[in-house]
Length: 144
Image (cartoon, rainbow, N blue to C red; front, side, top):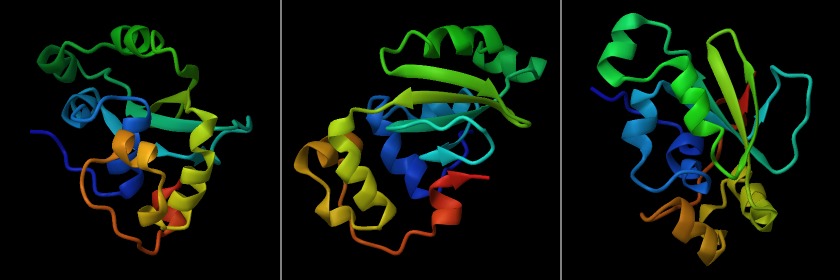
């Protein structure tokens, strides 16, 4: 069974890097969450999005999914938008560069102004109806 991800950062912004509909596969691969910044690292990144994966070191997980740490790293680092990766206490953080043309849309996302996204951004990240909301930055945007 695929875990349900409830935060908007994960449910909406994964489309900046992965195709729509990829969430079940990402969850099976151990996706823990997606962030726009990571205060857990000293290095600062500009125009990046962070995908946090659980390390698939459990033999049962590897058997069920066929995903090993090496295969996860190899497949993700082949993306043109891949930028960097580092280990965390829970697993691995993969850093991707998003197109800077979407910088204003990311600012609007942080402000909860989803209805003001550019049409191109809406088409890429989400096919449903987006309504403005108050975004809890501590839960939605940053990994501490």
